[in-house]
Image (cartoon, rainbow, N blue to C red; front, side, top):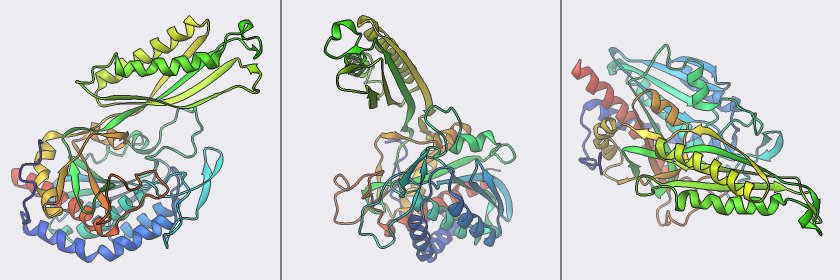
Length: 431
């Protein structure tokens, strides 16, 4: 696979890279302590005030220029190297999920908060606590080397990757990476490349990546089927939106299985919510459905959206009902820049001591995609499944029992630090 040639090289390519790895090892205990603290005190999207304060205080102590309050709770630190050169951006997401954590962990979350108007339990069930801690550690590693760094490093601690906890369903507002960019994140200092890591089930300490499409685009699907209300014992006097909605759901499956060229690019259409009716003996007036569309190609994305609207509307019409369909874009496909992947593959191999693997397409979506549309990006994965456990059977991300082997986290710090150093040095030599 493109980008894996030479990935297993073991020796650092420069004394700066070697120094970065040594400094990463020295900060490992702090890294774990930060991760546990953040894990025990999770915060939902747009509410990450404690986490943002912890990050900002740390960056200030390192002597970085620090900006806070970006996209509500985002934090950005700028490290000035001792020599002129390019700019590298490193991104970590800070938000948690409305999930109740399983028992057993000494530093398990007991936090509760408000998610879109409802009181919920809160947990770092996707590993963003690990991402934030790794980037804090990377900032400490690189700050200790600033005099020898040719260029600048932008540390982006982003809120609301999982969506804003304050935006109610149906509200069309921006959050996370998109809002940071809208507020001018890259206007005063535009990086030449951006990197990010995500923890996933996988061999502990293993790094994986791919060139091109990496995570899926995400579109929100909403369908309202309107019929004619009446008595459940006399359905011939009604137009039943419940039966029609069931037919619509079945029909939507053919959008992928019969209308999408799956040899070109995969696609997924999922209806995850259906609501309607007030009593068992009443045929309701309306049924509402909501779901998600995932694709990896913009042409396929547009086609699937068109086919969904046509299928739902015509199926409803055939029953005498009406279907109102909206497809609202959320996140785009994360595209890893092929040249950047090829350049960084050897560094990733060294950072993981050769423990690397090609990444499969991921069905989840990521708002890192907004950053990677602006500048060349590389989004890679870190395996965090403890040794002796099968990554295929452990609890996945977003599960109450999702578990992070903390011994793997120093590898993520090595990777972020090593790639930053290598990129800065390579551009310095060209100039």
